[in-house]
Image 1 (spheres, one colour):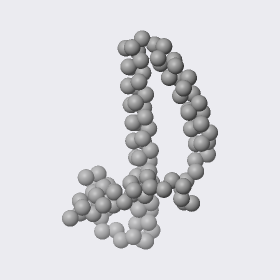
Image 2 (image 1 turned 30 degrees about the horizontal axis):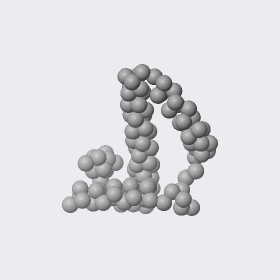
Image 3 (image 1 turned 180 degrees about the vertical axis):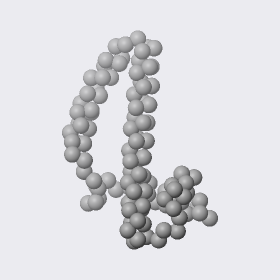
Image 4 (image 1 turned 45 degrees about the vertical axis):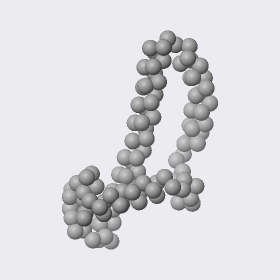
Length: 112
């Protein structure tokens, strides 16, 4: 039963995170848009450089870039989830949420 609850909580949080990035409660990070635009500008130039390399070196760089994208995505997801966990623990510590389990047990439940 508990796993079903945590699975649904996880699904809800993921839906909330991905659903509406234009909502008025969306967080704006200083410099994000500018950096995103710079990356987009550099993308085409980098593509030309990559295609000028021998096939084996192209493949290595493309695989590395793919792994970097995966890692960035996972780091963002980890930071997002950590924020929720910290918020829940804070509210629990303030007595605003029932604390039926210890923070350690809470973390074990989430990780399942």
